Image (cartoon, rainbow, N blue to C red; front, top):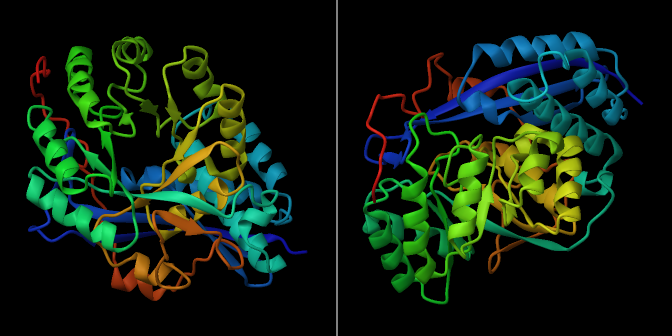
Amino acid sequence: MSKINNIEVFFLEYPFPKKINYRYSAGVVENMIVPIIKITDNKGEYGLGEVTHGQFTHKPIIGLVQHFKDLLKGTDIENINKAWENMYGSSVFWNREGIGIGVMGGINIAMYDLLGKKLKQPVYQLLGGINKDKIRIYASNGLFESSNELIKDAKKAYKLGFRVYKMRVVNPNSVIKIVASFKKQFNNKMDLIVDAVQGSAANPWSTKVSINLAKELEKYNILFFEEPCRVENLKGYSEIKRSTRLNIAGAESIPTARAFKPYLDSAVFDVLQFDIATSGFTEGRRIADLAYIHNKPIALHSWGSAISIMAGIHFGLTIPNSAFTEYCFMDHPINNYLFENKRLLISNGYVDKPKCYGLGVKFDKNLIKKFPYKEKINTMISTSNNDIKLTI
């Protein structure tokens, strides 16, 4: 058909205005950074992917893209599984988990997008066809310290057709008041997810804080409580899971089925999340199948741009155990230029199967000038040497 000629990465950035002031329990979100993988074939056609890790680091992504480009140049674009195994096999000594898998995931998504455009098929058809005609999608933001700000944002989401909203904990001492306000405002109209954001916190709370917070949240009937402790704290997850009747969800930074296995064997997740722009479609299918064997629903994580949002939709439509996919609802204009149809249509909390070739996204190099990236150390995750929180 055609062969890979080039693999590039482009970083886009939109600095949030000071008035927005997005905050959460482990840091501050000052900008929207979109690391886009672009694969071009020898006929000049392209496909797009995204690398979630690129929101946190820059230079390692550049080097890894170059590494995998040298490996894959000349590969037939339809041999996506072979490309995945070649990337993994060539890097297995240093790439069993982490950022290398994330770059592989972005490349994997871009290959599917390119092949879909070439074959004039949506990606979900290349993944084996749909299992359902529509998928439930939630608005994901809630980076606010006050009830008024959060409810204002949730009202905007509701007006656009969302019926589930995810909020982040800013302070465990004040979050219950915010949850109560949300429930009062949206009683029987909109469901709520609460993300503790402790999975990758540099200085996480003690496990007891999350246990006590979970008990307080039980009365509000939230859909699930996400990442209440550091991802590697498997024992902590077990303690939290035993202490509450809430659904416990995790973990977006676990990239492979092999890495998820001990968590599923230990039954610490009621809802399994993996990041579509880290695991990609090939490894994502393995994770979803493993979760299916353990009778666990999938809530796809896609904290990124239109590219990862569309990837989550296409993938979620093809698996039997998908419960939700995520829509990063932070207020930025980049998606307006990436969505093929400018925006996503959501009706009563669902999005229908896309009518598109590939993912349904596009790229113009003018975006690089419009949203220039300034190389920096991203301080989204605070490394301040604060005291460990012991109470709520």
